[in-house]
Image (tube, one colour):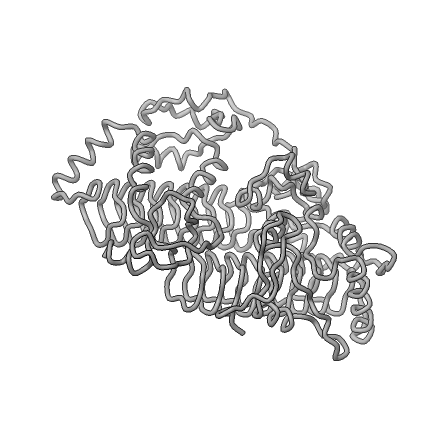
Length: 568
């Protein structure tokens, strides 16, 4: 199917935020296609009651990537690092323990109870089973990382793959010897940047490709040895977009770095790059598609940070997916997924499910499943089939019982909805929902989200120093700062620096960060647009375009054609 040339068939008000959203003929076609069939009867999934934004926020509230704690395994009682804090009611197990054959997930089964909510029964099941402490595979010496694979000698890296000697990285792939980076890949020897591809030895850069030995770049392509530049292509030895000789460039760059603090230069960079036009979206090789930061996507709508996607809608961070809707994170080679997050590789017809991995097919309303098929309302099963609430049934029993459960869910207004937000194992402030859709504790609780008040114990250090008391010059920083706690200038939360990052700061004459790693990640996120598309006009040719910049924002935004004429 395809999501192009959609026609609105129903206008609805979101029952949560009251915003108007549309249901299209293509949406109805998708719901019909993905709806399950039992005994030759299709059990139609009705139209959603929440707008796309609120549906995504609800899914995001089940994903804790960046908050990790010291905790103890509920199976071996050994100390470990976990996404569940020590006061959490949920049991945890490390990856090896979770896959042990010496105990069975079927020990947690329960019979279906038609006198109460299915969601309540799944919630009770989720609270019984051990949860994986954190998601990390095929990695070494990277205990303080989460949602990572193939990482080596890394620290506080999250949602990343194939990193070596990287620190404080988020959603970054195939990189090494770099610090404080987000949404980038193929990076080496760099510091504090976001949305970079194939760059090395870059500092404070954003939205650039194939750049090297440069400082403070924005929206640059194939630039080398440039300083404080924006919207340049194939340039070398430029400062503030002005061309210099090599000798002039090196002399002037050194003078600027010696006479200005990095903090002031960073603020100058923010102001400098704001005056240049932006492209409506960062997209490559797309066809009949809306979204941002995408590549190789066709016949799709509202797709973000994804590649090789076909006929999908309202998806974020999925790859090689086809015919999916309302689907986020790791949709690798998946098809017919609806209302899912972390559904995993090679999933087929997975509906209303969370954290399923590897070849899970025909899964409905399930949590943390691995290589399972034909399961309904289950949690934590491996290589299972025809299970309900973790109880084993025959194929005939399963296909007879599931339609009865669906009818029961319909009577309770549950059948067409994703899991309610209060079932999330995490506090709203621990999840990516809080980063993309920030709310105060009062607002979150009013909206029925959980909230985590746990604070990690203060680190054992020689002394604590407020960030504003740190020397500005890196040469004045003593070696024993490695034994101190620095008090974040924003949140007052303590943090420490490592020898590896101190070596980097000294090598390139950078400043010691004054913000907690969480705050630095949020600061980098300011260079990224919301995961939403808006209708607006190109500020140059005035034609109608789709962009992740709304017309209410102050940036000058060009369509692809006008931007290319300006830059290339």
